[in-house]
Image (cartoon, rainbow, N blue to C red; front, side, top):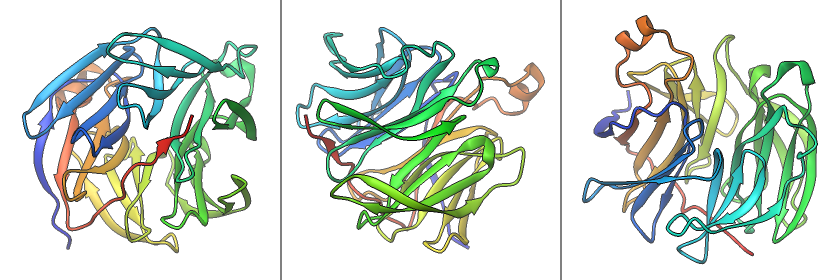
Length: 292
């Protein structure tokens, strides 16, 4: 059995921690607390935590070549954002006409494009979420008919694209044309057991997919054929997203959430909403950067 060693816990108590990423240049972990409109940066070597207050809910983001600037999917759309100054430059708000929707999961692909999908917050509006590709300043809709976009990541060679509509309890694998940025031929890659939903994912250097199982209290590592290779059990029921970090890219970073938990549940899992850092025998990949 694989040994996972918990080496650090950042006690932030996020309402909805999400979109965790490792910045290799800063040797820092970045993540967002969506519902509290906060962005966190943590430098493990110094145990130094910085928190930024945001103009609106930040759902996912990526790094750019400009170290002070992020590419962001805020609740209402895409923007370039500078956390230190608060400067924001809107690029696209493709669902401004759908006030019951907001953006959710997102990631930069290895060709420098930012992908992010939306989710339906107001059930009466129907299944109106979509997946978008932002290349430079060009925003294109790729998929629609989505309830909650999640699990966006790619195989190491960019030949496969992974995506989940969480309430369907499935992660799909698509053939991916990396040059054109077009996914096709979706196949069921992995399934979860209701009521546990697939949340944020990442892919390691061996091409295995790691997924945070919302409600399931664990992170699952799936082989390229979809079979379960490893399971990491957590002290919280709502893990939300995973990434690899550290100097050797062998640390698994896991965000979590407190949202929706009763007082009784919170008493049983007082660490809900914290960031967990585990040492693993596996290695991840450096995050790609958005090309403006």
